[in-house]
Image (tube, rainbow, N blue to C red; front, side):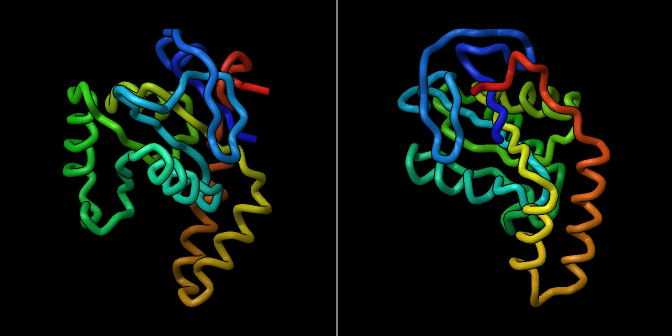
Length: 168
């Protein structure tokens, strides 16, 4: 299940406006991702499909991807945050921002920092996330251990969005 909030539906600040849209693998009733300023905050557990969905959205809607795991950031949270803050000021920004966002406060923080127009929380079953982590990181056993620990922590901390953010 994907949980989505954006124009047309209550978001972190309770704002709303907009109409229907369709995302690959996501059923929602929020506004279109075509034209204008679009900043999508994409959250989910390790192995939930965040990077896959981000690549699909980027290809289909000509969006840039901001992911702290990308080599360009060299693990620098400071540089990453600076880039994300600049999105909020860019009237023509077209981007997907990937964060884990297990807690509501974290999602609200990143949505505000980036000036997100949309947010998606991937609520992928833990068993599927676990299988994906093992499959993709098979050659690097130490990475599997780290990712599985992060997965467990994400589900311990997960706070689902309010019911009004969930779309059939």
